[in-house]
Length: 112
Image 1 (spheres, rainbow, N blue to C red):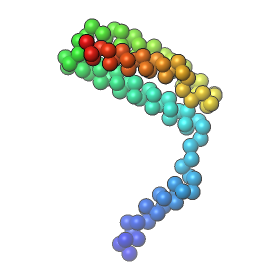
Image 2 (cartoon, rainbow, N blue to C red):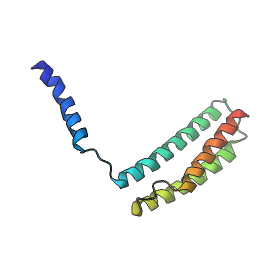
Image 3 (tube, helix red, strand yellow):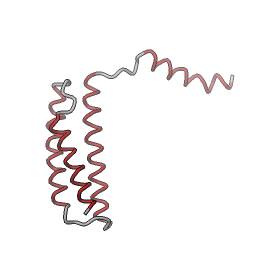
Image 4 (cartoon, one colour):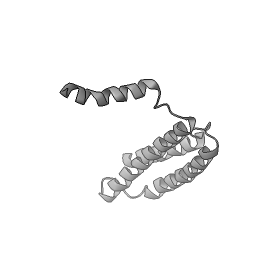
């Protein structure tokens, strides 16, 4: 009886996964992709700014990195609005490029 009590939730989860109850819709895939891109870029930017505040990195590159991050956020807002009506465009290449520019500028700033 004790084993059944602990194994029953596992059986339910496996049944849901195998039964296809967790399939993703195109809309969910689009928003998950945008979320991952935005979350990773923002985490890198937040870590960089925290390092500057703690004195790990110089403040000279903060305006450039911040400008690149602001441009990324503008592009991301447009991509989210676009994804509401067109789920086929998961993450526009310009937004991916802007995220890459932010990461690259952070890496370059840390190297100086």
